[in-house]
Length: 77
Image 1 (spheres, rainbow, N blue to C red):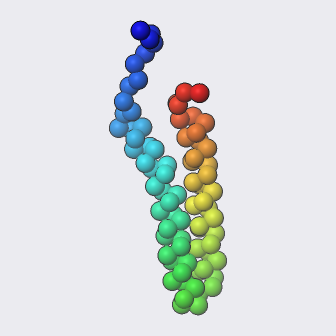
Image 2 (cartoon, rainbow, N blue to C red):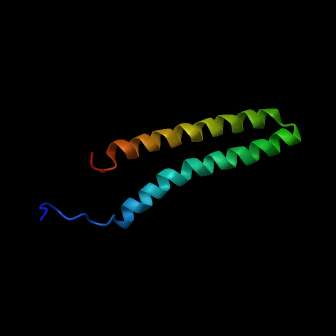
Image 3 (cartoon, one colour):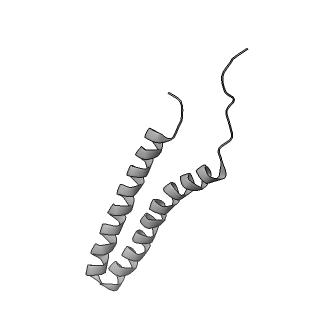
């Protein structure tokens, strides 16, 4: 019979934090893609460049959040 603590189900706060850390960068990427496409079709190149920057920022945030959850997520080795 194995000894040790039983695995506890994740709390609502932990689930909400994980959802926030995944959904915000993905939403930033999606919004940047949509508004960047609209800006390019309309010929507003300065806005398109800003949307490229926002997309790169969203991608960077996604990678950082993935690393944080991998490093400090509390999953066993």
